Length: 427
Image 1 (spheres, one colour):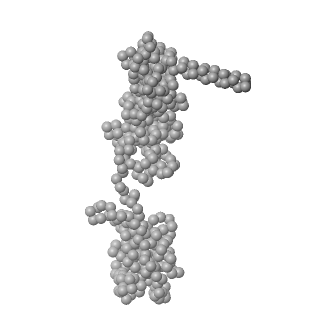
Image 2 (image 1 turned 120 degrees about the vertical axis):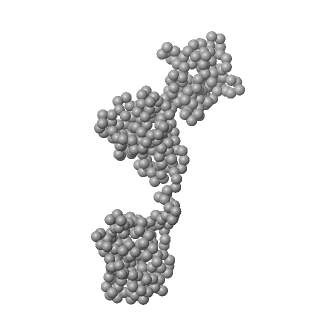
Image 3 (image 1 turned 30 degrees about the vertical axis):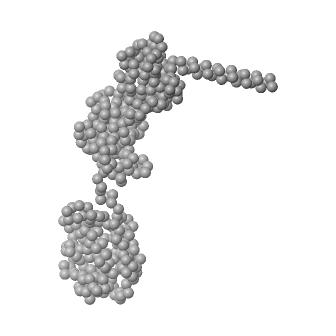
């Protein structure tokens, strides 16, 4: 039993010692009884201080106006540190010091470089309370091969940034580069919010940094659209944008602001995919005797007519059925199956007033028709397939005679019948 009492006495003595130690730690910053301290040693100073002492207060805010956390406030006099505290929940730290003028330093316990207005970081009897806004200074860590002040390309270390404000330290020997990586599409505005005689210019992408600016800087701003196709799910699949900063002093605040949504682009619209019906996919039951012979699109007298069976016929409605080559070669370009395997057969369609209507993809439709193609890789030509060739061919420039980019080379072909180039009849 004596051992138990002896242990209890020792425990009480330990608790008493801890209480005394806590009281001594709190002595220089009395706390308001209505708001007990969440972080002893930090928060605001009292309105009154002991005799021969003056209450000083430093509030530290992030650039968005929220209280800064995990920030050390140091107070110096004549280069000598007289006190330091970790800011409390409100971003404030209070000090009781002899009435005098003091210099304030802001530091991060994690070692991050912080930027703030050092000229405003002074406590005086006339200004015993100050508010400082801190910005994290981004270290230049992204390697970049870019033009230098000496007129050649050299390796640089660029600062990587996202949306918002970032303090960029200036290079002391060369250009300062910033690489912006977006996380969402939109209209973006890029500016330098502070610094002395800062020049901001846009120079392209990290893989190809241009010597001259690619866009004009207007009133200190560079503005351009970043579309959804430029923003991937990882940094490797997302476009990056390189800016150059030039100016005097230790650096400047670089700001990337998303100002709105990018206007809707035809390239962002879903594909319209026409598909054949069950009737369209019925195997052809007519006679296919003879040799499959390509239509001669260089013959201006070439005529096709749609018959009662829904298929096109050569010459008139009772003439030979016209077939379209899907997986067999025609005289002028690769067969449609091969094209579908390597690219998209499509068209972007516009209304008469010039407004965008829709974009159409034909790959899926062609692959469906291939399921009923015969051993020659052909199916009868119907309205849906005829529309596919006319629409896609017109958009993709297969008979773009005005620019000499057509598929017919030096052959003279009437544009009205050029779309029949992949067609043939059995003779």
